[in-house]
Length: 106
Length: 315
Image (cartoon, rainbow over all chains, first blue to last red; front, side, top):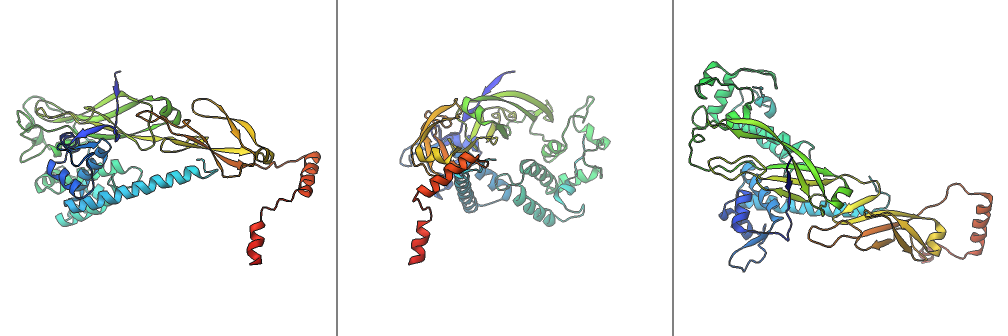
């Protein structure tokens, strides 16, 4: 059986704007809207050609699914994605605090 | 072909109005959408829901679905005789056809006319799978066996469900919740559309000794009271084998001793740290001699661990 190589979706990998569009299924207009609303930030917003950390693909894909499955407008998508990011940050913080708690092994 | 009860999935009556179907969808979507839900089987539940809704929201598809009559979910059934004729001349079997694929392919006719000889490229579907791996596997890198059931299309554009199995190499450096992409391992593209991708979500099994936060590891380090007071040197397990750790005199319970670089490796070089969290372990059974020594210590010591209580009370 052939073994496939998996690629990290990590901020150190960069994706061009067009690649992020293709992989997330969002149009360039939709992606630019997410940038305008502060949901996604390119590595260098002053650069002529935008690129993004590959971890942003997770956010962009989530945005596309939410838009499609809940029929949200761009503002709604931006709001939901922002809240989800906040939940994720809090969950990470909670996990970190739990890991530091002595005797909290599972 | 196996029957699927779309009305049952959506929890609506067979006579439900379009509005009722839409409301039921919205309610269940909030509960099961994989981006929002914390339910265990959200991904699968939402797929079922989406499939049911896509069929029932479209009057033409809904009418065709109603034609199939009502069966038990999962029950084998034969579509009405007219259906076979819609899919080419030769002998035709619905055996490995998924009901959802059949309705998804229906657009303004019995099946998607655009598929055969169609010109519009359709990208293949992306898939998401959670790979549960042990902490040791994340540390060293590992291979996981994956199995997917994906649609493949015959020349008439009809989807057949095909099981695909392969191995994926997860390089070292995984942390809990990290994502990887396997390009082109999702569903096949149509009419020259690109193949979909497979996304892996890494989930680490809980470990007997180590707790994980990002690439850092945490380990409880029990010390005897005298070890904490006098200081010592102890053998500590790490994922790369055990190492010696110096415990300075006067170490407090809850204190963290850092073993730099003994955590999980990071994908782009470097590694997290291992923190040993000190616990003071008290022996439960003491011999006569031990008791006598503790008593002697209690009499000789002026140490008052609750001095701050008294200061507070005196205010």
